[in-house]
Amino acid sequence: MKHWGRSVSVVVCAILLARPGLAFADVVPARKAKADRDAAAVEKRLASLGVDASEARSSAEKLTPAELRFFAQNPSRVQNVGGLTEGEWLGGAVFLGLVGFLYFGFVSNQ
Image 1 (cartoon, one colour):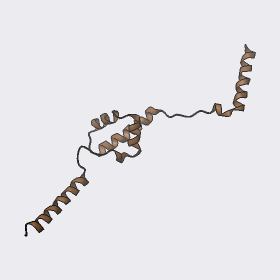
Image 2: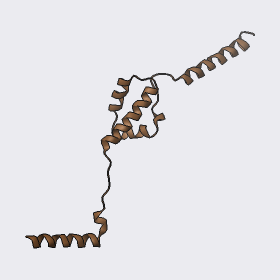
Image 3: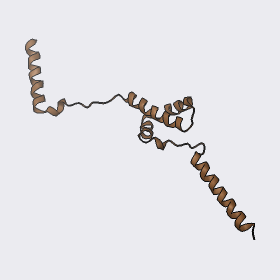
Image 4: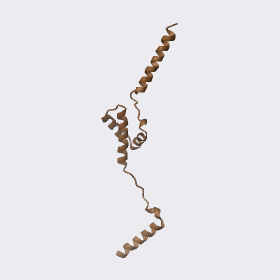
């Protein structure tokens, strides 16, 4: 039996020396840890948009790992769709002020 085990070891070593590529292995990181980091990045972005922490967590949990990775790569992809941002409010106010000024300047003076 001892002789048989040595013979197998010699054959395996010979194969690995002849074809060293057979012994290479990829190191695959834990997917759960990566998904948790991506979810934390998405939750942080949602919190910066004014979403409640519990709602941000539940929204991130509903996303698939591929979606989490997509949004975590560029957090600005997460946008506030349900409401207007401060810049949009300001732009709307400026536009309404300009329209009001033009109306009173040109239409009411005729």
